[in-house]
Length: 111
Image (cartoon, rainbow, N blue to C red; front, side, top):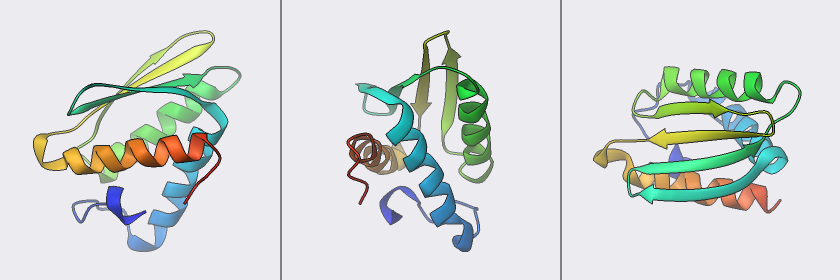
């Protein structure tokens, strides 16, 4: 967990495991693909459906609030939601860790 929760995150430490669990659940339930267009961008494809867009937008808005180095762009569609995540060069390692965590959760092998 700590690899993608850097010291610059302002979410209270006690709340961090819950946020990680929320991302893990999202990845496990909806992640269908991950791509890395460049070293500072990650794209995730999630299944759409009832309430999916609202759930994604709520989670990324809360994450942006405590980890302002993330830039999330949500591209909704009827059957798929594309989430584009960008960071600055200082936080490339955080993006790497997020990608690994997402892949593990999608494989139902959450560490």
